[in-house]
Image (cartoon, rainbow, N blue to C red; front, side):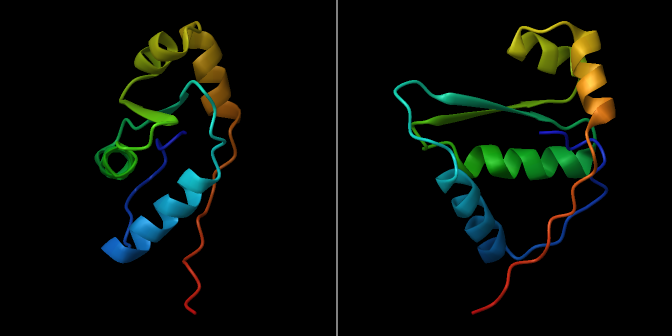
Length: 102
């Protein structure tokens, strides 16, 4: 998950937990865990990624790894750094809409 373009985030703690719960439910339960690597080279992105890592820490089927460099992401995924940089460069930005009340 590329968090390199995150410049800040504002969400009430209850909203954050609700979003994380919905995301976590979307991961399939498999015998082995799924590794999700968050590339978070900026402070706001790292704060968000660390929040996710903490909130998913007890999930038996998902392991969150936060990295602050493309080299670290490449090491975790076992891919060459140029491949990671290409993926990051080609990824479109994503806007997360606020939760709907009700």
